[in-house]
Structures are given as C-alpha cells and as structure tokens.
Image (cartoon, rainbow, N blue to C red; front, side):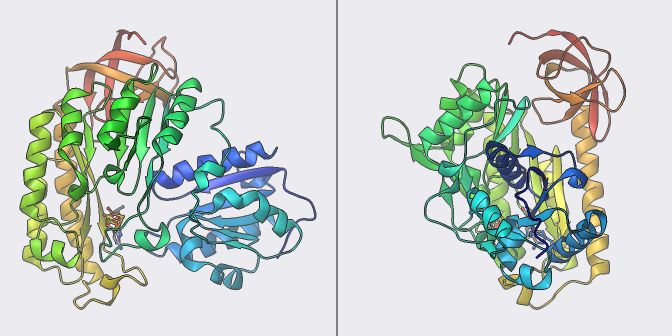
Length: 447
Ligand code: 5AD
Ligand code: SF4
C-alpha cells in the first residue's frame, strides 16, 4: 500500500468499456462530490484515481495492471488507486496481490460503499468489496447532480441471465435485476430538472426490464417509456442494449406510437449461422431474428438498426462466416459493432474445440467491417436533403461548430450557428460521410 497520510480531497474517475460503465463512473463521481471531494481534470491533480474497468474482451486484465504501473510511474505514490468495474469483480483480491500499490478494489454492485472503503484505505486496512448485495446500490447513492449534459444515461436494469457461452457479463454483473419504477421516475425527473433533454435507458438486457407502476400494475419497458414520454421537458428517449428474445409486442408498438421514442434499435445477433448461434447459447435463430426485424420495421419503417457481431467463435467455418455476411446484407444496418472472439476465462466457449487462428479472425473481421461500413455510408447518404431535428450536445473540432445527434443516432455537425449546446434545432442534412453528417440550421425548434 502506498496510502497517502490524508483522506483524498480530489478525484479522477476513468471509465472504460460500455455505456453502463460510463453511467457508473458518473454516479461514482457524484458520490465522491457529495462527500466534499472535487473532480480533478486528470490523474495529475488527483488524490484518488478510480479505474472503472471493463472485462468483456481481450487482455482486459493485463491492460489494468499496465495502467496501474503507468499511474505510479507518472504520479508517484500520491494518488490512492481504486480499481472498480468488471475486472475488479472478476479478479477480486488477486489485484491486491499482483499490484501491491492498489488501495481499493470495488465491484460494480458495491461502489456505493466507496466512502467507507476510502476510510479503510486511509487507515491502512484492506479495502476490497466485490459483494453483490441483495439491496441495490442505487438506493444508497446521492441524488443526481444539479448540472447535467443535454443527453444522459439512466441504468434501469442490470445483469444478465442469458449465459451466452462466450460472455463474462453474467459472472461480473450478476443476475438480471430491474430497478423499481418509482426510483427510475424520480431519477428521470431529477435529470430533466438538471437540464437533460434526452435519456438513454441502459441495461445489459434493457428490454427485459419489468416492474410495477404507481398503481401496482405490471409494466414492461414499453410502459416505462410511455410514462417517461409524459414527463414535461423530456424530448427524446432511447434504450440499449436489447436481446432479441425480450423484444415483446408492446415495445415494438411503442416504436410506432410514442413520438419521443427515437427510431433506433440496437439488437445484437452475433452470428448468422444457426449452428454457431446454438453453440453460443443465443436461443434465437437466424430466421427468428430476421422475422423480428421485419416486425420492427413494419411498426417503424425508418428505424435505424444496429447490432453486434463476433467473428471467429470456436468452430466457425468459412461457410458459417459467410452466413454472418449474408445476415448483414439482409438486415441493412445503420451501424454495427464487430469483434474478434476473445476467450474469457471461466466461460464455456473458452474450453471449446476449434479455436480459430488470429489470421483467419483478422481476415473475417476486415470483410465484415467493410460490409458494415458500406451499409453505414449508404444509410447516412439516404438522409441527404432530409429535414429533421438535432439535439446539440457539444462543441465541434473547429471554431463555430456544434455537434449533436439525429433521431437515428448519427453525429451531425452544424456550422456557424447562433444556437447553443442543449438546443433542439430544425436542420436540413447537406452532407453525408461514413461517420457523420453535415447540416444547416433552419430555425430553432420549439422546446
Ligand atoms: N469476445 C468477443 N466479443 C464479445 N462480446 C461479448 N463477449 C465477447 C467475447 N468473449 C461482444 C458481443 C456483445 C458485445 C457487448 O461484446 O458482441 O454483444
Ligand atoms: Fe453477454 Fe449474452 Fe448476456 Fe449479452 S445476452 S450480456 S452477450 S450473456
């Protein structure tokens, strides 16, 4: 331990990985802020650095250890180091053994206990908490900060019971749990009061969310979305990530009926071959996925579809990979993420026969990404000339530019406008590249 003699007064939280980690990072920062600590712009000014880690793919663990080493080389013994997130959960006490200079290890379901872990570390006591307590952390966290960006995340559901054979999430994030309705409505109201115009509902299986409304009626994610749609001041609602098997009729109907629900759906399929899908334990087929997309498109014809793909899953043959390419052709994605299979310790697929060579994986990934990129460009070009609305979220790279999102989650750059961050503006799309659109503002839209 290289514990500083005094309790930390400044902190820096660095989040890796998924949007749920980004959300957790923000909640940790707000929690530390509520303890009287102030945010430092980077590790150099921080008495406490929190590495909020991701374990989903590739050498995640090695990367954390090298980050710890780099922090100590750059900043010496000054900052207390806390390892949070999914690597903390998976490695637990092993982190303290391998990296003696780590002061705190805290899992994703236990970070509400950070203040007492910091107190333990200051006293030189071991500070490790990888519990998955029955009570949820959210109830123990302070209310949302008074100032927020125009677009915010709100975790509504955590964990996963699906046990895809390649995936660590069921082990690091635990079982599927839905946060209660009233708590979510309160947090959404607080976010809107703090300036938020768009909320993205988050969960590893967000469309598996269920609960009861104020009147005790059972509700699914569509019910929650309809209630949020009625919140004055909230103009846009999104949700991610969805599992095909939890995509129920009510949610599909909401896409046709709820104006504030944006026309975007992230619906991972992972692979195009039924044999591979079965071996992945995905419990849907190629056909059932394609039929599902048809139903979603019938409800909301302009929906932008997104997905996730894994190439080189153990045993994947050339012909099976071709089926992944063909599902991309049939689905016409607006965007999609694709990854090389990465064996995760403790998951069933890590011990399967037929591990695919890195060269074959590289070649398959390149071909898949070329197909996805072509579709993405085509989708962007199809919006040329269209009039739509953009929520301005940040400054652009060059002076006078502001960047926001279209309803279809495309990045849109507007030049020389009198508008401000947080404004919803009417625009016409005037240029389309592979990764962003250019637009001119027609007028400032009504709030
Ligand atoms: N190897 C490669 N990709 C993975 N994903 C999850 N686990 C692995 C793994 N072991 C991908 C899936 C998932 C996304 C979040 O990460 O595509 O949808
Ligand atoms: Fe992982 Fe599958 Fe659960 Fe997604 S559905 S988090 S890929 S186990």
